[in-house]
Length: 196
Image (cartoon, rainbow, N blue to C red; front, side, top):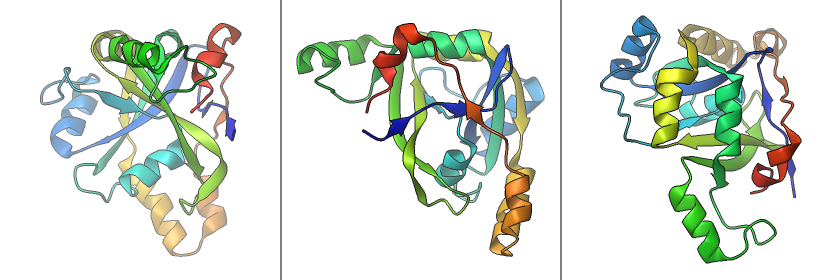
């Protein structure tokens, strides 16, 4: 099993996660410091604490529909609620009693977790994995109404880093990356999420 450790920018009360959206969603979110229409509460929304995995997913903000990259500061109590109420996105025999039991848990859980290969600054795969957290139903409501502390559009900074990489100024680009540390996950639900 590849290493699964949550790495993030965080302090005593908050953790930063990333999302990328089209302008119609991102600009009002920043202006209101809250996700508002046309953001759809009824859809699953995926949050990611890994900056470079987000850059891989949105292509440094160049993919259609993901032009604005947001750094969302959320309450750690919300993040940990999500971890506690999560189900892995696929069946693991060492965790789930039966495939039917896992399917039932997945259907009921407001949070899904999957682990994908982390990326380096060139967006190549690393030998450890990064967590992606899918929120649905009650979890989306909590995220939007209770957990979000601030929303910042970091697209300009992301494009600057990308430009430096294209210019082969890797050291300078690396200095602009967020400093992510290992997130201290409570022991009581480590085994629930540290598989994929």
